[in-house]
Structures are given as C-alpha cells and as structure tokens.
Image 1 (tube, rainbow, N blue to C red):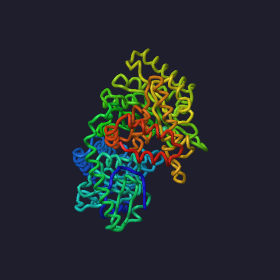
Image 2: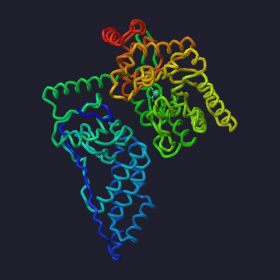
Image 3: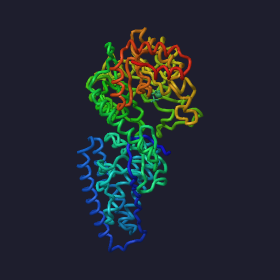
Amino acid sequence: MISGILASPGLAFGRALLLQTETILIKKKKITPINIECEIEKLSQAKIKSIQQLKNIQKQSKKIFSKKESDIFEGHIMILEDIELEKEIITLIKKKYRTAEFAIEYSISKQVEKIKKIKNIYMQNRAIDVRDIGNRWLRNLLNLKTINLKNITEQVILIAHDLTPSQTAQMNFKYIQGFITNLGGETAHTSIMARSLEIPAIVGTGNITEKVINGDFIILDSINNKILINPDKKTINSFKIQKQKYLNKKKKLKKFISLPAITIDKRKIEISANVSNMQDILNAKKYGAESIGLYRTEFLFMERTELPSEKEQFHEYKKAAVMMKNRPVIIRTMDIGGDKEIPYMNFQKEENPFLGWRAIRVSLDRKDILGTQLRAILQASHFGKLRILFPMVISIEEIQELKEEISQAKYILNKKKIPFDQNIKIGIMIETPASAIIANHLIQEVDFFSIGTNDLTQYTLAVDRRNDLISHLYNPMSPSILKLIYKVINASHQAGKWTGMCGEFAGNEKATILLLGMGLNEFSMNASFIPKIKKIIRKTTFKKAQELSNMVLKQTTTKNIMTLISNFIL
Ligand code: PEP
Ligand code: MG
C-alpha cells in the first residue's frame, strides 16, 4: 500500500493514466551573427503565443475556480513579461551566439535554481511555476505539441511526477476522477485547486510513477491516505460500496451547513473553522463555519523570503475580519519553531525543537516581530471582531509579558490616533500540561482558552506527534488527556469565561458528544468536518452528553473509554 500527503479528501477509482514527463531536448549549437535577428524574432513570437495561451487558460479557469486560483496565471504572464529576463535571454543570443531555445533554457534554469535555494515550501512551489512557464515558451518556440488534459475522454486517475497549475486548470474533471503525484505539498497551487474543486488527490508519494503503469486499476482513498494498485475484485466491490456510502453521507450532510449547532435541549455551541489563508476562509464559509476559531498566521511568515511588514499583515487580517462580517476571527500569533521554520530567520539546530525555541518563546525574544504583528492585528480589529490568541503559554509570567506588549502596541496606535478595538479579547492556547494544570490561575489573566489537543497530547503523553513508530500511543482519548481537558473547561467556567478547542480532536466525530458533555463552548476544525459535527450536536441533548462525560471521566483506561463511547446510545 502506498501513501503520501493528503492534498484533497475523497474516494476515487479508475484506470491509471500516466502522464509522461516530457523532456525538451536543447542542442548546444551556436548561431552565426547573421541569424541573431531571426532568433530574437522566434523568441518574441513564441512569447506572444505563450501569453495568448495563458490568457485563454486564465479565462477558462475563471469559470471554474475562484479569483485566487485564476490569478495564478496572471502571475505566469507577468513572469513572461519580465523585461530583465528577456534582456538576459537576448544578451545570450547577441553576445554568446546562443540559439533562442538554449538562451531560454539557460536563463529559466538559472532562475529556478536560485529560487530553489530558498528552502521553503512556498518558494519550492514558485520554482515549479517558473519551470512550467519556461517549458511553455520552449514548446511554442520549437513547435512541440502541448499535452492537453482537456482531451481525456475516459474516466481515469491521473498519475504524474508532478502537476503544474496550468495542467490542473485544463483538466477535464468529468473524466479525471482524482490524481496522484510523486512531488507536491499541501500548500502547492495544484493541491489548493484540487481542494477547491473537491477532487480527491494525494501528492508527495515519492515514487508512484515507478509503481504504476498505464491501465492499472487504482483505488485512491484520500481520506485514509491509501492507494491500492490492481486490488482484487472483492476489494474493488467493497470500495465501490464505501464510496457510494461516502457520497450519500456527504449529500445528506449538506443540509446541516446552514443550521446552527444547537442541542435538542437548546444548548448552543459555536462551530468554527481552522484556517491558514483566504482560500480556507472561503471554504469555512462554504461549509457553514460561524466563526474562525484559529487563524494560523505563521504561514504568512513562511511563504515568503522576508518578514511581512505591519501594513501587509494588517491587510491580511483586515480581509479576514471583513470576510467574516463581524463574526469572531481568532488570530493566533506566529507559532513558529518545532517543525515550522522560517528560512530567513536563521533558526539554530536544536536537539528537541518541539521543546525548544517555539511559538511565544520566539515572539518574546523577538519583540520587534511580536510588536509589528500585534499592531497589525489591532488595526484590523477596527474592521470586524478580532481576538488575539497566544500559543504555547506555560506560565502567568509569560501572559503578563505578552499583555505588556499588547499595552505597548495600543499605546503606539493611540498616539497615532489609529482606531482599533480597545477591548479586544485575549486568549491563550492550552497545549501543554503546565498550562492545563494551572488553568484556574491562568484564566484570571485572559478572556478565553482554546485547547490545542495536537500538542497537548504530544506533550502530556510524551509522544512525538509525527513519529510513525509510536503513533499507536498518540491518542487524545487517554484518561490523562480527557481529565486535563475537563479541568481546563471547568476552570474557565468557574471564572465566568469560555473554552474552545482548535486541535484536531474538535473535528473527531467520536469525541463530539463527550466534549459537548464536558461543557466545551466552541469546536474549531477543518471546514469540511463542520456539517458532520453540527449534525451530531443537533441530534443529542446536553443532558445525555453530560451523562456520557461523567461516565467517561471515571474510567481509567482508553479501552474502556472507547467502549463506553461506541456503546452510547442517544
Ligand atoms: C494544537 O496544537 O492542537 C494546535 C491547534 O496547534 P498546531 O497544530 O498549529 O500546533
Ligand atoms: Mg499547537
């Protein structure tokens, strides 16, 4: 069985269509001075043709994608129109007597290598874009046929080394059931497009193209991260039934999108989404999120080559505030470190990065960065209902220091007479045992808690959340984690405040009734889980949920907890 990175959830099956990576052969021959003008003319004609093709693709993609995805092609056109790039290519033709194709290949490869040196996912994806543009230019110059994904007329699972955004935009999704690639990451444009079209996709498999040949029967399960090649008839049939069930369930769940999460006995729960960018916010709204429970701002810092300015951050946070139309947006300050590095910040190699320079530890050491971010959030708070959330807090002292920084940011803005929400609510994430244990003290300092079960589980159980070898030990259904969660919720309620949860556990349907019974006020999750969780909440009573949580909290083993939950009848 093969797996990879889940780019877009869903179930699909079909015959494999292997997209061969074309190699464009460039001869190293030189030209004579008489041919210079002719080469420059060829170069310019191919450029015009490429721009026209990209404009057509952009027009076509506007019909199916949001503005953000179609704008990718605007960026491609801009690269083609880059005067500096063209100058460099023409110089190679004129001064070094190179052919136009050699000059394009040389200059594009140089740019790609330069971008690739910046080791971050965003720039790696930009390198793919530049390569894509170079290949288009070359194909047009050499009159090579472009692979046309529009012309596929049978149902297939597309298998490729990598897919470019322009290839994805041209796919005929009536026939392409899903795709699997060797390369790619969750934030690659191709993955973003697959998610917005809800086409199942697994990327980053490493070597799928070596394991599959054209016509193989493929099962693509991007919910459980499974790829099966030529499975037996029994497996295919049971997968077909599974897929039908999944589709029926998805269809039925649609009606819950617009309904509030309210129990039969009228306890109202806030259902929110976790987001990292504007596309996620659109998705959150599409799936019925009432608010944003976690805006992971670190991606704003990662997908670039230098720190984002106050103005840039302000625009991003303001967009989020305006898009949610006065519904709460909880902005978490940069949670960098651990497995999330910023290449331009020169992180030192650490023995235990998850126990090291991470989250507010970085922010409190780099108050220039924190101050900029806080001022940006505060200014944006004037345009909606923003809240500030601090990650990885372990002590009262830290909160006091962070609040000091907020006061300082407010002071600066007041002095400049810039309007902002003077009473902006401040919360902390509870994601370490340290903060859970003293939650009753910490709540005196803040307005709300948001429980980060992803980290709370790894730190409490001492189980690295990414380590395959011990993944069986990583379970938030452990009595120790559940007791901590309950303790945190109670501490906030006793102080007349509220607790939300933004770890993955909040979107786990097995945990919904239990968390509801424990008194959790807000559930924040991946947007696509929202309808399912709303449905569960609407079909239960708070009283029944409390009965379950009382029983569960008395248990001493995970096994007993799981049995109680699966046997629980509403
Ligand atoms: C968490 O730890 O549960 C959380 C939501 O934060 P992250 O996954 O970004 O570490
Ligand atoms: Mg965390």
